Image (cartoon, rainbow over all chains, first blue to last red; front, side):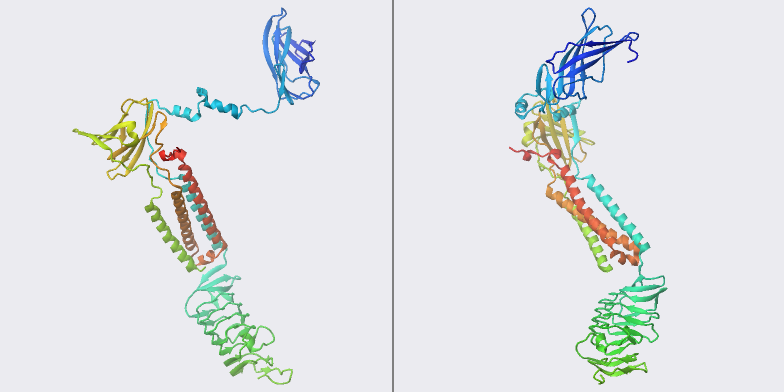
Length: 396
Length: 237
């Protein structure tokens, strides 16, 4: 406002009945630029907040002739109830204007609107109502009210007034085809990627009919067999790997008839490794074999088993559980330090009969032979002896 | 499952895939069906000149009220059609269904004319076209036949989608197995017992199931009455 060389403050005739009245206005005049503008000071005379104001400004020259008439709109402000307020914007007026007259047109308050001297409810109103709209639809449509499809149809009319197009179509949908192709690519990419990763990371491999699992750099476990053939030899080494264990279920329910162990290192036969091998008749190993540890139920339910020649084997209780037809038995000792009764190896309740039993045991409990009948018993250990029973009688 | 079982399943899925392919090919579920079969129009006159053979036929059915006759002109190289209207119309839309000698639909053309005279403009026909049927579509804003091609029924869409999705699953099953055997060789059986294999199978199944719904959805959208039309049988009187 510094460039204005004349500032005049004029009190305005206040009408107390107005909801918004003009208290005074200040005229800023810049004679050099021949500019003049006005800043108003209004009063909100209602006890409601004022949000919008629209008023008419009539500009008169010194002779009293009307120079210009303009409508000013102030929006997006809030004026406190029953308080004066000054709108932010100033109004530019004609430089020749010497007097102005202001007339309120519209004012929007919190709950009411003032327009043309009337106060109306400011609550929400619909533009049209169903009952009012219904008869209108029956009226003939004006060009402006034509529906969009009709307009479009009118636009479609070719200039030539004639059009022919092929409407034969094949029932194909592009998106499902694209979807199927994407699905195929995704699934195959997933399978190929995972297969390559599996090959790199898996420790399982297949050799000579055995499913093998790498345990360390030079030892493997046998966890499956599908080599076929009735006689299976478990070698000391498969490839460069020493066999250290036959895992549970490795030969489960296989049709093998004979098994030969040629292991040099210690070999553990886990529980259930040969479970359910109903065709198995003979299990043998040479005396040069490493120790073979038979865990509980390693040869579970091998009902046809007749000969067990494992001179280096160490048995557990129930190692041959359910294999009651064994006639020839050869083993070294037991996994536990204390010897067990012979019958407990088979978990038999009925008496068992052996043609030949050969062991490498020293001292055996007094009930070692209880419930069994042996035709030919021998021990490779010269210190073999049977403990006396608590009652003082021998058990043989 | 052992590798043998997987191989049997792979072979079975390949066989089923081929069978499904033939089933899709021969059932022709997506073949267009028409509201009208071929109707031999009454021949009015036939004239033969040195270069051409012109036949004039009376139209039939509802069309007769609006299009009285049509002339079929066959020359050595081209075939044309000109219709004779019952009166001049502000607008007329009609379908020209072209048939082969074996009465199989060759093409369907939709002609629209405004401010017609007594005769239509020349409509060129397919070179293999032997006969035509003219079906009126709309006259002066009055809709008579919206289309001559029926939309696909929902049952057919569902059957097609099911067959297609099932075949996709079979293909993925076989392709997955072959890929695994090729990449892993003798170690394939360990992968087939691995969780990743079952994840791939589950994902294939899930995607195929989704594919079924996608196909049904897309075909239903495409075949909506509003888009594809309908005919007199869709009018609720």
